[in-house]
Image 1 (tube, rainbow, N blue to C red):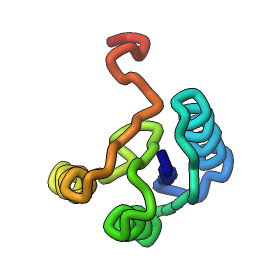
Image 2: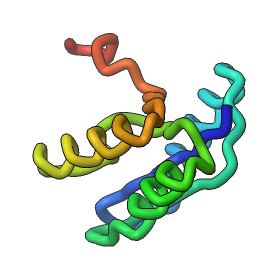
Image 3: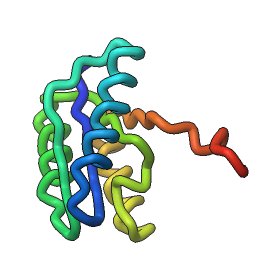
Length: 105
């Protein structure tokens, strides 16, 4: 299955962005996914996220890999809208972190 990854950081932080990409690529390798492109946004930019949605709409890919769902939007309504668009296009969303097993939960 072809997939894209999406990295997001509120501020320019190359280390954090690289960690996200590493986690996504590791997940892809472990689950037999082929990463075809990496999309990135920093700050208020959402061009990368739009690129993800465009790729899914064109059916270039059938999956999105993110480190956690919070990457898809900081506002609940935006988050739900993106998830719905991905779902409507038939894309699987893969999350590298299992939030339920995080320390302290």
